[in-house]
Image (cartoon, rainbow, N blue to C red):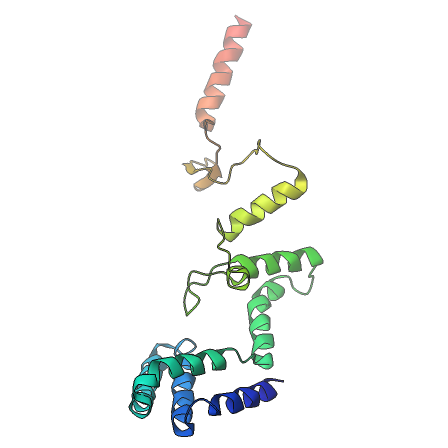
Length: 210
């Protein structure tokens, strides 16, 4: 299917774009595509190659360069490479599957799916966008973990009163049995030091005995 789609797009473009200019633009698109996939060492090489072939295409097309370049790049971007999609999905979920040591459940798969669909890309052409945003064209109102919490609350019927709000601050508490640890507290709650608590209990017991 990907090869058939590529052949159809090639035939369609050759009716509009001069053949020599089309070949040059395809080379430019090829290197532009690899800029987002290569490491820092090869990124500069692909950028130079892309700019060189774009300059060649501009010399061949003159005033029609911008329009035809956008047309060719859009058409080539629309080609779905089936094998790369499968490899991408495997690469995304493999760390999660490995951590489960083969004991994967449907609930875990649902959680992985929700995370992958709603997390925002940190780099590349889609930086700052989540896959679900690109699919629907609608912006997400909150990060993925907030949306997940909201969905769980809806499914469980939780509305207003939540024992641990999402924006609860983390406060450092001294653990006298070992090292320091973090404890989450809701607004309005106070963390009592274990030493002060035991002292208050002794004073209360002494007063009751008197």
